[in-house]
Length: 392
Image (tube, rainbow, N blue to C red):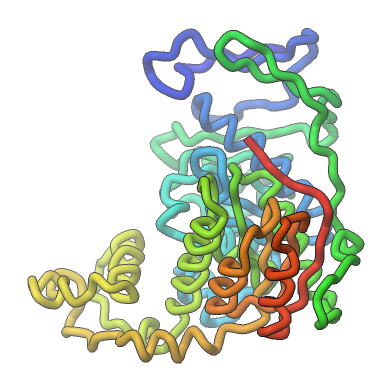
C-alpha cells in the first residue's frame, strides 16, 4: 500500500485528504485499528522521530505524548518513585515496565496538555503500557510493534475505534523534505543532527561542571525541542520533560510558559497537595483540574463560591504563595534547553526560579555576555551548541 485515504485534512472542510509515497513505494506504516486522521499522522510521525532519537541517545525505551504537532511530554523509561507514581495516577498498577514508565512520565508531567494525546513509543508496546494507555483519554498510538495481548487491550478502547499504527523501525526517509504552502513547494534537507553528550562540550560559564545525568537530561531537552513547534524551550529533570513552552513568538514567553508547567509538576509533589481529601469516584481528569486550581491563584475564588464541596470531603487549607515559594525552592538540578539563543538575561532569571542549574542553547546573541553573566550569578553551567533547532 503506497496510499491511505483520510477522512479529511486539518479541518472537516479540507477534502480530499491522503498520505502517500511520491516514489510509489510502500508506506512504512500499517493501521491495525481505527482510522487515523491528518493531524493524528502529523503527531505520530513527529513523535516517532522524537522517541527513536531518545532511544538512540540514551539506550532507554522512550515515549512521548503529542498534541497539535508539539510534544506535551517526553521521557525515557526510568523507574518511578512512590511520589511520581501517585501524581501520575499509576500507583495502583504496581511496578511498571520501562516502556510503561516512560509513557507514565511523558503523560504525567503535563496531564492537562496531554488530555486527548497521540502517543509514540520507541519499543514494542507491552501489556503494562497498553493497560496504562487504555484508561487514559487518548486519540491513538504508534509503535514498531505490539505484543498480541497488548494489541487486544488497545482494540477494546473507544469501542474498537482507537487508532493503532505500526511503523517499520527500519524505514529511512529521503534526505530531502518537501512541503506545499499556498501552492508553492518548499524543499530542505532533513534535520539529521545527532545529539549526544558531545553536543554539550562548549561550556562558556565559570561553572564548567555538567555531570553525566545532566547531559542526558540536556539531550532529552534538545531532542524534544527538535520536534517542537518553535520558538520553544524545554525543562527536564530525572529523564523526563517537566515543562515545554512551544510556539511562542517571544522567547521569554516560552521560558515563562514552560517554567510554570515545571513549577506545577513540582508543586503536585508537595505533601499538602498529595494529601488533598478527594471524594470517592472523582475522575482522574477532574482531579487533575482540581489540583491545578488548588495550586494556582484561582483557589480563593473556588473557596468563595463553595465549589470545593463537589470535589473534596472537607475544605482544604489555602496553599499560600509563601508555602509554594518555599516548596519550589527545593527543586534543584533542572536542565533547560532552548531551540535558539537567549537574547536577554531575563530568561535565565526566570529559569533560576524553577531550579535550573544546567542550560544548553545555540549562543550567538549580541547580548551573550549578559546571558553568561546572569548564569554566573547563580552558579549555572551553560553550554553553547552553536546549532539552532527551529521546527515548523
